[in-house]
Image 1: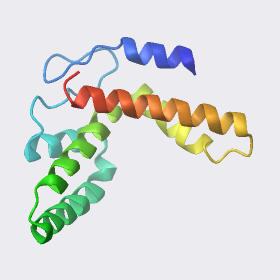
Image 2: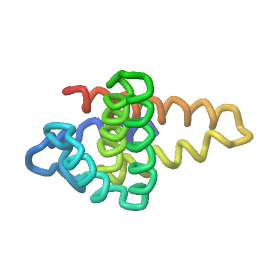
Image 3: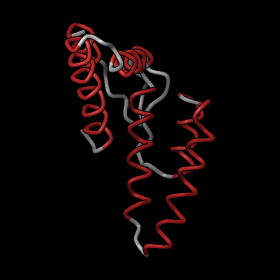
Length: 130
């Protein structure tokens, strides 16, 4: 797993610009709703219903709580989804790690948790600007 992780880290970011090797789309340069919706449609179209449901929940809760924090969290979460899914190899590694968490072998579970955590943390850093 470590070799694949190093290879994914070496891929160019492509933030809002030219596509890098193995990249489905660029990360929107600004996480606006139209740009984020288009990016989700491009890299994870099957998740659009989930995207819209969470969007609605975020806006309703933000209104109820009189705070934009939940909306910002929605944008951050889905920016991370796009950052991961726009690289098919990275997304496959994450999904394999998610499945491996259910392994009866504690060493496999531990490795899977580390792999998934590294992928998600790297995506959070990229969405935050590097």
